[in-house]
Length: 433
Image 1 (cartoon, rainbow, N blue to C red):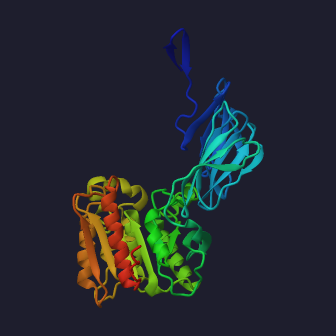
Image 2: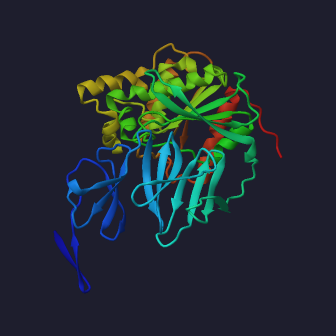
């Protein structure tokens, strides 16, 4: 115990959780009870109550138990109740609880999207932030949490009729039977006729969750009759730590299998064809695209690997690459070397092979994934590739990995990528207004 003098009072610092292999996050203190969120014996997280006068672990009490099919992301407190923010099949779900953990029902959301709620311990109202692929970030007000109904408090003006768009979520069986969430964003009038230009995006790594959110750069694609699809692959955080670990090190191939299965599903269901299907990803997602196009070059009509990790045997020798061994493993470990070599995009480019039309993108000052990865991959791809398909590299000058890139550069890069896809898929240029 430590003692801190604060004015006339002496405050004691009492250790609660020390040396326990789990995550702990204090949420709220009510009287002598501290509520804390933790992954102790629960990879999807629980809410526990700790009496600050008796902090021994044996006295901890589970208030909101773990749910196996959804992740408890956070807990908010109002005057009379708690709000649990969950992620279920990648979308947000909000549930009300009393302080003993009894469910009081859900807070309805506008659709399949991502939401966060702001509450106040002195009030019974709340504000909710919501977004999805077909709705820009909108703020809703809940006048009384006991009877939660949403009213728009603020919404940005978008010069596009988003009511023509729709978001659909399906689940696709991967190679080993694992069900992978897949989102499709498209016009409501579109039907599976086997000829829709489709852009499939993925990441699959470092416990990152690809949650639904508004992305204005996909609007021209959808307005031109295209489908934008997002696959939530293992390696991400969509289903907690087990889902993350299932896509790491010796299990990294699961991520590529998930993405390939998502592409095959889109074709099998009649939405698109290999000639009309493009894949895209950046950074670890660039690795994803590189690995999938070398494993299944027949499956895609275009590939857009951005700032990708392409040399899996030497990535740890440059800048921050050493930190990625937590997900990838290291070529200095014999078993991990074999796994890395088996899918390393640079090392798996095969001579006299027809690869899909490809535009590699990178920045000349990228100090996270050094541009040498993209340089080597593009050069080797141009060397071994046969056939008429274009293989290009776009190098942004005075630019890095992407964070902090000026909007003007983002627009230029996105315009080039969409123009590249439009040319490969024979999509006519939009008419001037």
